[in-house]
Amino acid sequence: MTHPDSFEVPRAPGNLTRQAATPDLRPELVDQPDVGVVIVAAGSGSRTGSRELKQFRWVAGKPMLLHSIQAFHRRRDVALVVAVLPRSFAGDPPPWIFQCDIDRLLVSVGGRQRSDSVWSGIEDLPEEVRVVVVHDAARPLVTDATIDAVIARARAGRGAVAALPVVDTLKEVDADGRIVRTIDRATLWRAQTPQAFPREMIERAYLQAIRDGIVATDDAALCERLQLEVTVVPGSERALKVTEESDFARADRLARLEG
View 1 (cartoon, rainbow, N blue to C red):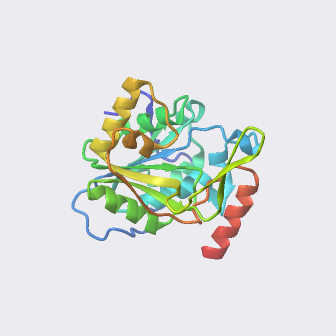
View 2 (view 1 turned 45 degrees about the vertical axis):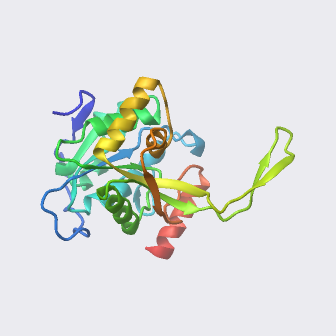
């Protein structure tokens, strides 16, 4: 049973043919797929200055959202990928979506806030899912190693956040731009996605946040407020978040250098 605001992706019409799924990478042996993936792609992307939705624009050779969907479809242990899109596109997604493994793809309708969209996707995951991965479509160059790491940590019963240690010196400043103090960076990390959790953990965190009226831009933060264990795993500079117009060119360069 799917959420009322979710859509099975239709079969490819006309001259569009579904491409075969990219060969499986990891893990090699899976008894039963138990990973559900929520890809958040419901934002307007207004900071790029383009009328076209950021998540549908081409970067590094294909539409941004397609990068992420195919990265997770390469895994045998993924039962379903839920792509959360703006309402105006959810019922009629762009035709390149047919290049995905549509037997393992569901399109869901996003909400007003990011957390609304994530919860919509979580609600659509089938019962057999035991590990939930949340990923931002704005990070199209996620690596297989990072996906491996967060899922392995979630399988061990803990939340996991891909992150990078802070390397710059950090200054706290007041309203007038005067430096108040220098912040010790030794314990600071820059959070990325994907983030992965045991299903019962992330569902508990979201249900409590809904009851308390809490909105968050980071899924791990909802677990942290309940003092549930969340750890960091090494992320990648390759997994930059495409936010500004200049980031498209940066992503293209990274893909060429490391592809």
